[in-house]
Length: 44
Image (tube, rainbow, N blue to C red; front, side, top):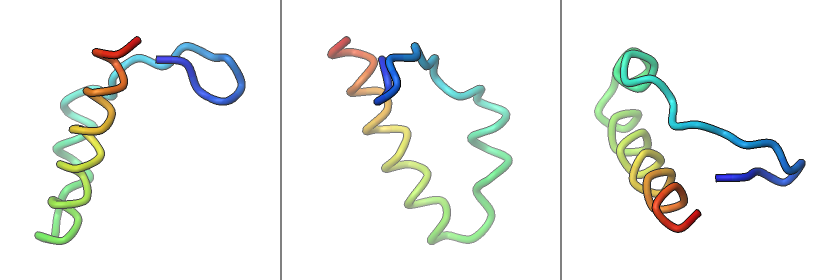
């Protein structure tokens, strides 16, 4: 999808996504972020 500045953004690497999730709260936030990001990619 394209961000506010008009730059194309690809999905974050899976390694990146898994590496940031440590606490369960972070995990939930990350899962939600990935879900939203995935939806944006599908819509673009």
